[in-house]
Image (cartoon, rainbow, N blue to C red; front, side, top):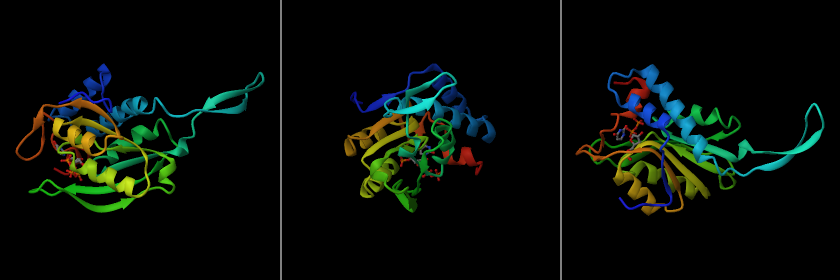
Length: 212
Ligand code: PRP
Ligand code: URA
């Protein structure tokens, strides 16, 4: 895969360690959910390192001063349903005032193409930093469809966070939407014949929601 300035692969040992726990097939739903949330928070810290700051006046017990703050309302977190929902609380722990959108997509089992079933974004999406979250970036079809939808509704400043990605998905997203900054917890080897990521962690939605 070519090196791409818009793709940031996480190097932090805490993230690597936590991803390894997710991979284990014996990791149960409870722990899986908790760790997805923790990884989302750690990745969100990195993804929001360029959030704009505004000086505001506050009064300390000593005196008044101007001090930098972010406007959390200018951030929108948009999970791709279902599995992306597991990452939302991790981002909200950092930016509690963020707005939340939802993009409902599932992959058709035979074509592996995304099928849309529900989409709702916060108002004034064009004025917000939009952080799209989905633990898995496999073929990239769902990610591209989600970003297409957000752009169609005016979104301009879009970042995408996935915990595990396949080279195929990273390439498709970077080629189709080169303006979208992509944050990846780990870049895995490849997709198998069922478009699952190898070694991956299996079906993220089923593991978060305990549906299999
Ligand atoms: C998974 C995952 C992504 C998508 C990635 O969702 O959470 O949304 O597959 O695959 P792609 O890059 O090939 O499009 P899935 O369709 O299994 O739905 P779910 O989250 O409801 O289980
Ligand atoms: N979706 C998943 O949940 N896992 C994969 O490996 C690929 C797509």
